[in-house]
Amino acid sequence: MPNRYPLPLILLHWLILPLMVGAFILGEVMEDLPRGDGRMSVMGWHILAGLSMAALLVPRLVIRLRGVPPLAAATSALELWLARLAHLGLYAVMLVLPATGLGSILAGKRTVSVLGLFDLPSLASLPWLHEAMEEIHEGAAKLFLLLLALHVAAALWHALIRRDGIFRRILP
Ligand code: HEM
Ligand code: HEM
Image 1: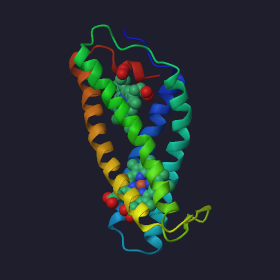
Image 2: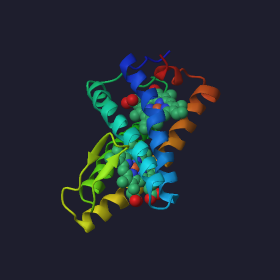
Image 3: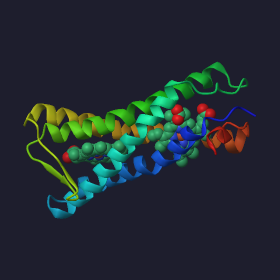
Image 4: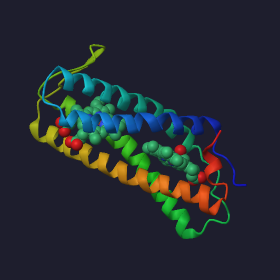
């Protein structure tokens, strides 16, 4: 049976899942709401989920960069590269989403209060930067959905059809 990932990485993988999916759903809900208190409160939860994910991403990257067990010997070169590419893409969106979300607020017109807990200020009102950050944020969110769909399909294929133990690598 292929080696498992280190336990802390496994726990971080499953903790980050609801935060990423939650932030995505809240982001979509928020986009459809008219400006006002309701929208600001959904945005607050959206930001809280996104920033919590970013906090968990730091130890995850540290563990990951120290090296992980190699994939199963039976895995073909093509599968190996597809998996690496998908994992790299998932890490990229996990980094880019909080960075551009925060960037769009810091380059925005006004301070954003996060559920009255703390404020994210406008450092400089730069409309072009604000717009660019928003565009990249939206694009990265779409890319996340696509990569997640491929990732889950691959995981199910390994678990149900190939039954090669790859899925168990990420189970505690
Ligand atoms: C971490 C995972 C995150 C995901 C998956 C995510 C996803 C999304 C989505 C789907 C939208 C709606 C985009 C659209 O359809 O136009 C959105 C908007 C937004 N997000 Fe995030 N987001 C994340 C993190 C963050 C963080 C950490 C912040 C701020 C610190 C943030 C700030 C914003 C803002 C200000 C908008 C509104 C932008 C606009 O008006 O177009 N996001 N996000
Ligand atoms: C229901 C949802 C999910 C399932 C069933 C799932 C399943 C798996 C499986 C089976 C592996 C092990 C693959 C291998 O041995 O190489 C894995 C690894 C991985 N998954 Fe997921 N996953 C899910 C959600 C997510 C999400 C939301 C993200 C990131 C946003 C993610 C990012 C990763 C990454 C980057 C790896 C490689 C190991 C690491 O560096 O942490 N997964 N996942």
